[in-house]
Structures are given as structure tokens and as C-alpha cells.
Length: 324
Image 1 (tube, rainbow, N blue to C red):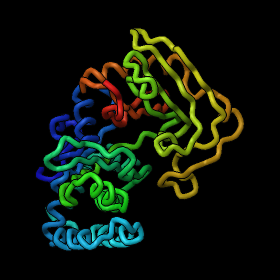
Image 2: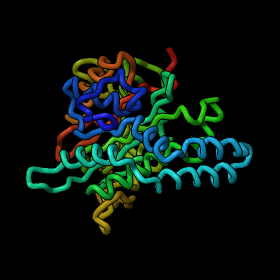
Image 3: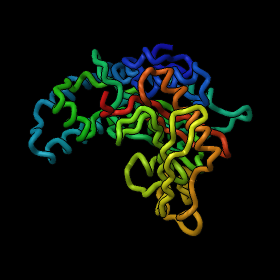
Image 4: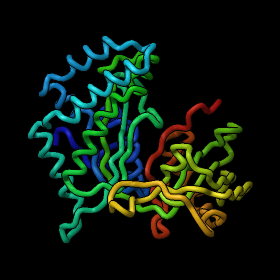
């Protein structure tokens, strides 16, 4: 295939084509880690669409007229760019490849599974392979029509006002951004969170820091939720040094009314006060983190989730801002 690749076909060296998220997921699958299966619509796909529909000159022209001292001007013109992308007809060869991979996700009975559609990014000709929190993720998506709609949204999110503004701040040409949507089987998480294989607060590389909450990790990544907090040693087996169980207020999970998409819910009862992770789960995470770090040869910021007691790894990237 020219524009779409299965995650298990990719390695970390391919981040220029697939973005850092997808490349690292592929590397972890190859390393035997439990990563949900799926595929990546590579960066070449959006380039192909923009070239076929002659959109890039229009996009660069609009960006060239932006007043970067006026947020309203950036927002208005970036919204027009996103509209052009979401409304553009996808070339037949690209659409065929995407549909073939969507078909491959179906169960043996032909049922469409829930998937997550995530943004994987890079910058052409650069070592930059992530923009944490800058691009969009869509959860509990089902069926060809919804998947393709959300792939379009991921493409368009390359040109949110904040993404355009940040590239301008960093002197990155607007046509150098790479976005490669990742479609993965959805993990219906009972509990999820992030794990840092070096403590980003103290800079200690001998400690693992874990934050967790009920439901999807989105409540943690967005910074909205009060969450449980743990510090573990990096020994084998690890040892729990600190456990801070907080009064949690919200969780994010499937929109129960619509049956698709995600929604934020207020917590009640024991879920407010109960610890989200057992000691056994903390040990499992603490053992796994250094193994993933060893793959990438640098402390990692790892997103994880438990579904029916099974641990899945959803993302891994370098810990940002860690002092050497």
C-alpha cells in the first residue's frame, strides 16, 4: 500500500512518514508490548489530497495574510483552511486503501468494532515528532463513514489556530507539518492514566510517577480531573514510595446516550474515594515502564489503560523538559 500502513508494519525510524505516535506504537508492537491493533494513514496521504485538489497554494496564501498578533484573525482563517480540508473529496486510490484497512478491523462475524482515531504528527526534515496536546483524538468511533469523517478531522487539526500559531512561533514553515491519523481498536478503559519513567517534578531517573483516573485517560491529559498519584522506585520489583488517593470528581467514557463518542460524567459514591489502581496493577506498570524506556533509550511518558484487568499501552514518547 502507498498511503496506509498497519501499525505492526512500522518502526520508530519511520516517524517522518507516520508521525511519532504511530512510529512508536509500531515499534512497541514489534517489541511484544500489548498495543491495540490498527493502522496509520501516513503523512503522504494528506499531501496527496492537497496536491490532487490543488489546496496547498490556497492554504499557504491564507496563512500569509494572517495577523499573528490578532487571535481572531488566526482563528477565522485557520477555520477556513480546516473547512477546505474536511470538504475536499478524497482521491479514489487513497480512499480504497483506507476502506481496505477498515474492513480488516471487523470481527469474524463482520461486526464493526469501536475504534479511536488519534493524530500522529511530525515536522518534515526535523527531529520533532510530537506536539503534546496540540492535535485531536476521537474515541468510540464505529463504521466506515464515522472513521473517515474523523480521519478528515485529524487532518484538519493540523491547522487549528493554536497549531498554526505555534509553528509560526517556532519558525516552522506551515507546509512542513506532518499529520498521520491512527485508527486503533478502542480500549474501553475502566481505569487509565499516564506513567513517567523518570520523575518530571524532581528530575529523578530512579523514580516512576503514575497518575490515574476512572475511565479514559482523556480526563488526565486534558488537566481537568483530580486524579490519584503514585511514586514507585525503578527497582525490579518496584516499591511503592508514595500513594496519594484523592477525591476524584469526573471521568470520561463512552457517551451512554448516543452510544458513540465520549462524554464527561461526574463521579459518585465509592468511585470518588476508592483508589483507582491495586498494588498489583501498580507493580505491573512499574515493571513495564523501564522495559519500554529501554526500547527508546530515554525516559518515557506513557499512556496506558486497563480493560477487564488487561493492561494496554496507548502511546509512548519522550518525557519533556527533563534535565540531564
